[in-house]
Amino acid sequence: MRIEQDLKLGFKDVLFRPKRSTLKSRSQVELTRSYTFKHSRREWSGVPIIAANMDSVVTFEMAETLASHNVMTAIHKHYSVEEWATFINKTDTNVLNNVMVSSGTSEADFQKTKQIMALTDDLIFICVDIANGYSEHLVDYVERVRAEFPDKVISAGNVVTGDMVEELILAGADIVKVGIGPGSVCTTRVKTGVGYPQLSAIIECADSAHGLGGMIIGDGGCSCPGDVSKAFGGGADFVMLGGMLAGHQESGGEIIEQDGKQFMKFYGMSSQSAMKKHSGGVAKYRAAEGKTVMLPYKGSVNATIEDIMGGVRSTCTYVGAAKLKELTKRTTFIRVQEQENNVYGKE
Ligand code: 5GP
Image (cartoon, rainbow, N blue to C red; front, top):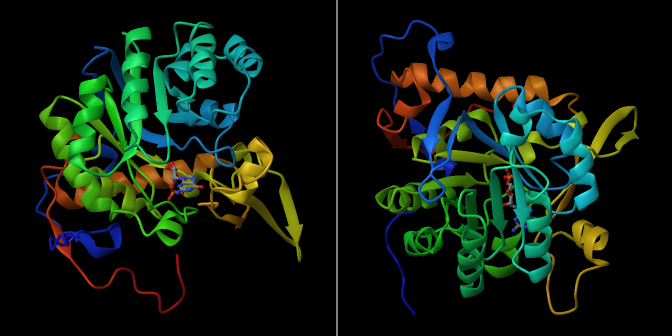
């Protein structure tokens, strides 16, 4: 047994230190980033925020709406090839360039990914996603996906430490997805005691990825626009959001009325709700590692995504970053023991 004494930080442990700036208005801040990916050599431009591949967050409609803001959507893996075909047939190239096709690591996942990718050349992102990215099996699978799709952008995860980020990039991942346990409907830390504070995971993993010319997605744990900024400030190339984008018209859930108020169900992909829906229940050998919650219904996602982007632009003006690209180098985090003042309740 060993204990690491270095302090590890979550979003709630820090704030940005403001810096002198010549920027007059947040409207001057450019959130679009242009990336060229390590292995695929693909180029992509857009706002590097991604809706999480959870079936109570994203639908094809979510992808269409977010693409109109140049924001990405990771489509969950439970759509059939036929449903993909219908979506592709009515959808313009900009939308398809901004979606990720999710895959687990089974043979069936591999075959299905091949069928979906064969539908059109406009799909360029593949998101290989398992809860525990420390499995050797993931590394083998990423090598196989890279060999099959040399010119597609491959994301792989989830991990939280630099050693595994490097291994996945060397195996063929362009992007590594970072986060174990921070998610809003995740109970991994409670069920297993495993995890890593998300801001430190981002800082350390970004360092490892960038050293090899790779990139990272900070995945999970953002509860407000300020957290999204902190993830970018810590070095995330992309930030993935579940809960912040759940509960909307485009999330696809049923609207449930209770005491005159409207709610929508949101659940983790390893929750009992998800396993019941997709795998006929929780297998005997495993525990559910996700929650099911009811969120107040929030209407269309347009206002929410604009609020998030407005918040990130504003962060940039406070630290003097004219572009999102400059945010990390303009970032000094201060460690704090307080965040917002809740005297009149929570925002
Ligand atoms: P959020 O933005 O809601 O805080 O986090 C979203 C992320 O939580 C997802 O992208 C995914 O990585 C993670 N996640 C989703 N469902 C589950 C689950 O059931 N269990 C765990 N451990 N993590 C989940």
